[in-house]
Length: 390
Image 1 (spheres, rainbow, N blue to C red):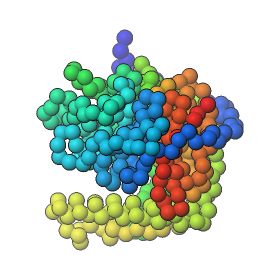
Image 2 (cartoon, rainbow, N blue to C red; image 1 turned 120 degrees about the horizontal axis):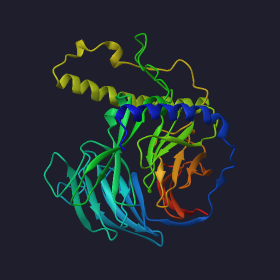
Image 3 (cartoon, rainbow, N blue to C red; image 1 turned 135 degrees about the vertical axis):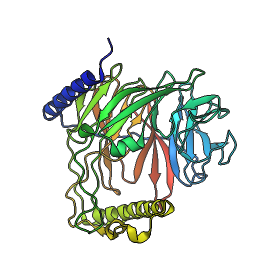
């Protein structure tokens, strides 16, 4: 029998309380192993900015260049890369891409900023453009969802970035891309479980305070369809598959990563750039809507440094957990920009382990028994390398 919304919410709150209570008793100190030897280094010289990587099958790799909008197809067994798509206005061209998703047949989906999806098969041949439901076309998907994952049955998952930023609960939506395309809410995430209470970014007329990293939870979906909430409140993972009610399945070990003076300088610089861009865009929208600059309080136009250096980095990095085709989910922990760091792994049976990622590297894709890292050199150029996962 289907649950009423009120009953589902009550059960969710009970599971939330249970998760908080269990979080302190189940965490186990882990020794995080390094990755093994390099399996291969493949071509990324054509790519200016690695914005997305998908491992298709056993050896194929699709790479999105975030700067040029081009999509490349390469192989772990060959240094050569072939161009799949370029930026343009045509139906088979990339308009404005934000990332890539794996597809069950070994192909890839290019995720556009407007929510549409560009589909290519395992050979890199164009299949279809799945447009938003408000547009005409052979395929329809929800408009303006932040697509984060796909499953083995050909479903894609996303949530509204507006809800994620403002609402107390966030709907997780699953869409299909077949002839009978449909979208349905399959779970609801509570903000009070995901994130701690927010600190005001504006206070006492001092403007936007920068240099303090925020602590946010993560929403993830495994390739077997499990919906996961990674809580930065209780450092635990909740899961649901066939129901909308989440239940705790694992606790994450607390890892203290101190913020040094140099780290803080880096944080302030990066946060200032992001905030300045946001303020600039917000002012442009307000003025375009008819507001006068003098009508906007001065404090909404100022940026100031946080009064105190934070003692530690947040427990979770602000990034979407990666999924593997065998059902595991990889959760990046908080870390300093120039240091090695830890990534936690929850497998398909909800068993918990961890790995150590080398400094100046980031994991960009996870396969069945291989992962791909983007490794940055001394002049900040990234090279893609594959490593085996025992």
